[in-house]
Image (cartoon, rainbow, N blue to C red):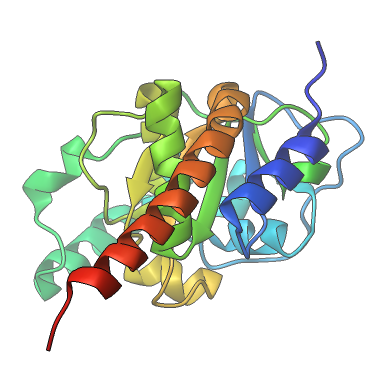
Length: 237
């Protein structure tokens, strides 16, 4: 059965009242037919999320990711010999600032294998089935999605993820829906602002999450009314 990604995006955005379009990402062995190649240069892998959320569908090749040593690491993309030291240099810079400790690096989730191409698109316009779907929005809206993932039985048991944001993609592929606070680099490169969090869903579970979201939305609306009335009744100066 062919998945109607357009309908899924519409239901997801309407039910969770999302303000940003979900981004579909696929890790491929080779460039996909009929999808335009990305032409240009970006400073990070997550910069491509921003472009897709704005409405563009395209694919990248490994060389498009070389400017982001950390993103290349999480995506199992090997830097070319002349740039191979950039990962160590980036980590040395971050550890020198006290931002990360070297002993944390081996625990960072990574893709199981190197992609030959990575496709990005707004979920409703994805040219082919994605592997993960990235949502960035206000915590109260993503709360509903995360609750729906739990209701659907596809939420991971991982703790709240943080830096680097891009590790949430391989984490979701391996473990299920994950929640991420993001990281400062991601916020600079994607313009999500200080108010946003991330939920990353494995695309194979998306329909189950969207189905569960309707009941979760209804329950939360009723509870909001209940708690509002209870506060008015029981609160005093």
